Image (cartoon, rainbow, N blue to C red; front, side, top):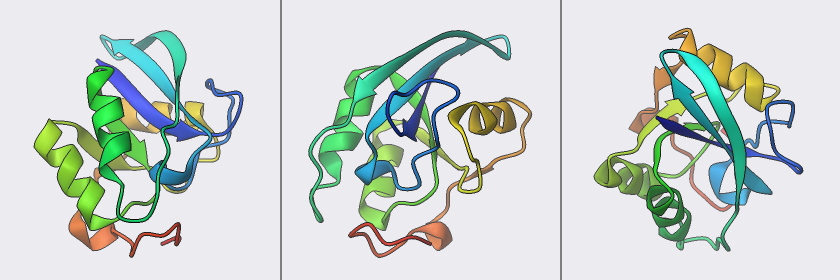
Length: 125
């Protein structure tokens, strides 16, 4: 399973967690199997403008991401991820990508709900 995590340059497990999926430097992509990290890579972020949130959703889906760990997003991209079959989990307090992945693998993250969405435009929750 591939997990996508918005992150800062240069990406990887020690990179800072990107607070808002649509405004991150890049995505760290972590392949997990049997509850263990098998491979870590990165995907570039795609241009994002307010109201244009679906391009990053499509980009992640096209690259095989099945789970996204996010800190914030609007309603429209959340619906897009749901339609693409990508499960979104709230990891807003994670300081690093590795911390977010560990919390996910330990079952400590809640699935993202409509109540956690923000108004878009880069606003934080």
